[in-house]
Image 1 (cartoon, rainbow, N blue to C red):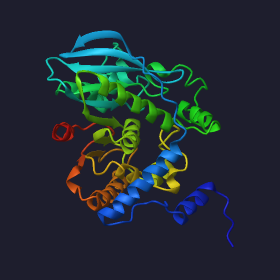
Image 2 (image 1 turned 45 degrees about the vertical axis):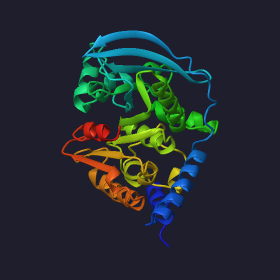
Image 3 (image 1 turned 90 degrees about the vertical axis):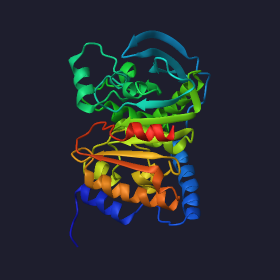
Length: 343
């Protein structure tokens, strides 16, 4: 017998011996449907408890005009003691009611919603973030006739205070552990806030509540995946530079944090399975061939599994892929045609 002391050997062996219990393996539409109902139920079970819903008490706290778009900074309540600031972008002369898209930011610096909405405070770092990640998709969609909502996630933008008070430690990890103490998790809390963001977006008179979409880059892709998986009001969704396998980005690279996973999820499903909960609704995957954080080989492996899910659901045409020659950023090469087609 050979002694094994290192943890990596243990965890990788455990992964190999314990494949996800609800990894999709069917072929027919009936098999897909039963699988999807079971996995969505299990996912919601793992995410619980969600906060108690409260009146949104939404208010507009700032208005500005730029880039041919009317901006409103709004604040709405998502749970007891929880308020979310967001930018709402309304195109000038938009034909209402218009389709609405909730545009979710990633880690991408400390600014949260601001670069996605292209709200420039004159900071060089923010300008670099927008340029490097092609990050202002909230504005880009607004310029094309969509009403967009760009909210701050917990710990980002105006919600940063106190989140990173432990020196160099990752605030997502520290606060994620805090939520575990109470049987909660940050992914579920952010998903709850994003669901309430959909409530607000759909309540606006400028927006057609039956034509709501979702898009996000990186951590925003994580958020887009989970929101679209559990909330069927999202009629079309895009996951940007996030599709991968848990083995690659979590176990091998360690390229994740306490805001990016649901505890226990790998016991039941891989990343592509969760994305598969979006079916039969349209889904666009963007993957950068040069994305070092989410290597293209893992993205392709996950996409092949996702194709099997959409084929079994008998809607292969509703799954779109933009595999672009670039790094960790929003491509947009197919995104505008995608949302025009489905919203």
